[in-house]
Length: 135
Image (cartoon, rainbow, N blue to C red; front, top):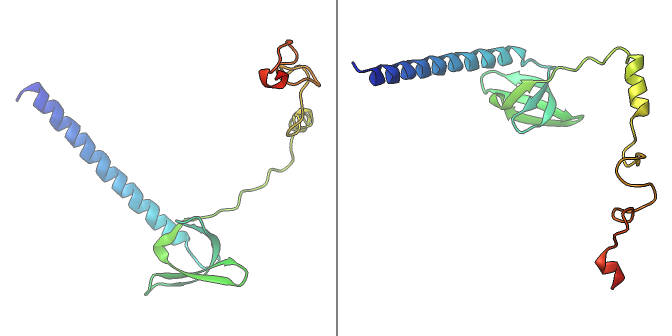
């Protein structure tokens, strides 16, 4: 066998290995998701709809999802994309973090010395004028 054929077979073997590995990983993730999908869990669907599972019908693969109080949707079980876990709030911000937040400018606030002089429009500081304003 010539070396090029051996290299091509080795690349093919590596591709097949990664294909099977990825398939097993997806199956494991899907099985883990199905164990987390229980009544009372907060979930997100494939279309981005958030809600709480009210009940699951195993035979019909149907999930009753409450998106807002009083609004119940019937969905296929496979449309559940992930279980939403609440993010734990930070205990208390450090004193250094609060000092940085206090020094940060507010949205739309001008910063002194940030390229233009206060009270001037762009172009007025260097003496240039807009041609349209002189006509």
